[in-house]
Amino acid sequence: MNVKQRRVAIFDLDGCMADDLDRLHFLTHQEPDWEAYFNACWGDKPVLPVLAIYHALGSYCSRVVFTGRPERTRALTVNWMSRHDIDRPLDLYMRRNDDDRDNPVVKEGMLRDLRSRGYIPIMAFDDIQAIAEMYHANNVPCFLCWGSEDLGLKFGGKVVPATTN
Image 1 (cartoon, helix red, strand yellow):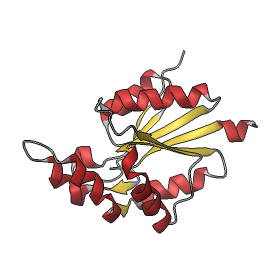
Image 2 (tube, one colour; image 1 turned 60 degrees about the horizontal axis):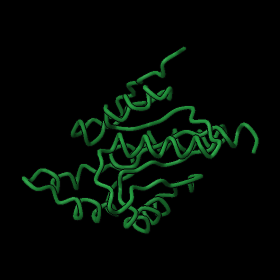
Image 3 (cartoon, helix red, strand yellow; image 1 turned 90 degrees about the vertical axis):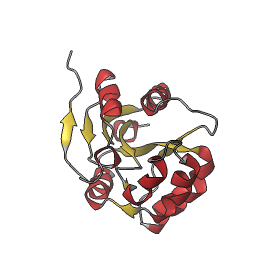
């Protein structure tokens, strides 16, 4: 595997590549309806500025997608990506169906697995501050996309830089 193939950019789906605002109402109840939220992902609109970066980076490095969506939504997710002409990523990491840990913990495990396979994460894109901070703590610069956590502003372009040692 050459250096270009080993370098990877990590992208989040919900609130980053996919506009999930129309299904957030499922999560605003006393008991969030995660099943309905995830099942409605087929209707998401693509976030075009993030997808432009995703496609542009394809000539420079590989791309992977880390998502908090459960594995049971893989077919819906792959179909959504195909329907919106999103190049197939090197890998699509999804949460195990029985995994109820917080997203930063889940994605940190995904990051460890990616690195253990010999890949070098060079940047990440996510819409959740706590996940951006996790990337920062793991020396991966993260572009913070304004998405579901901010209820509306789509691409703030805020960067949480990697630490320099």
